[in-house]
Image (cartoon, rainbow, N blue to C red; front, side, top):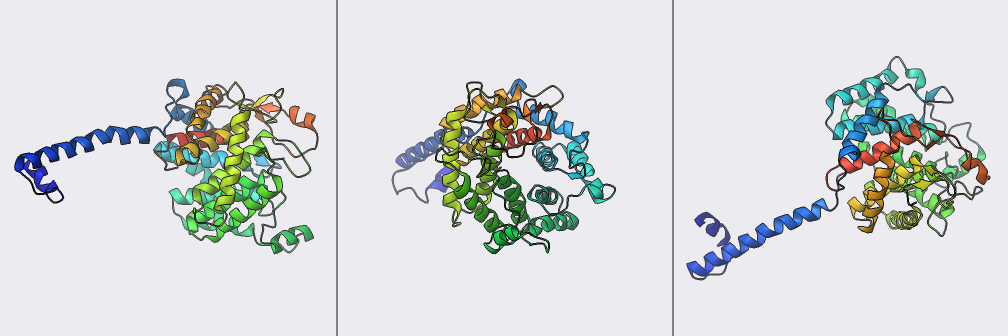
Length: 392
């Protein structure tokens, strides 16, 4: 106690030894009793899913499935965006869970793209192909090799470098400061955002965040409706689940990286909060969201539901959303897990979908099991659930 008394005598008032000792004991009691409270407050941001609903269990199951999966090629030629995101999700899970074997397997699979499978590298001529650059940039953050960085940055930069054969519309977008690949489909707001934010993480050059933020504001202004949701495109007035999921996840990724002082931060946060409020209202009693979000008679779709859940989890952990969203997460995650097979395949995933001004078209879209469109966002949820505190 003499040591403690000496430490605190610096700021305690001069008084009798007995009174001083009493004050020291009282101070220590206050500090001691505040520790459990602070710990409980920190833990309140966490989600306790155990047993069959353990994020680690589900993550291992889904990530392991990727290691031996065949490529899901775009047009039968190049690594597709669903595979890119599945790959990145498995990489992050391996790192968070400290699974060195899985990390090496995922890395070795990627190494083939730099040697024997170079023909699968996507060309840099479309929003759905340029997003591939986010993958080598993600690998660079775990294995800082110059070839990873150089490859990824080429995809990020070429998204703003107008090619010689660009159409007049593409040139017009570029003249206004947007990507020449702009097309105002809501899917784009993850495709563009993810590669540009990854480029920022690697280079720390703010121009990459500026690009993504400017693009996001334009899409918000053009496509977000008064109810907070998004049409698939200006000429397709339907609230397609996964399309809205790309938007929710894209805003989340950008807000996680964008400085609060950035000029576009308030606009993007406003759009995010408006969407989250609407999504909470449209969550079905089964915990999921339907293929067309506002259509009660449509079927529950898992990829979009996982993306919404991902946006909710981040929102609660970052303090953007109130604790009432925690109930929505606790309802959604078990429902999502119930759609995962013992082999790690997610069911009820809408296949790749183009825009179409026809409600029946969305209802009739095939539902696949194990489709990479669904595998990836499940890993996003897993990874943010496993991330400690607010460190995502």
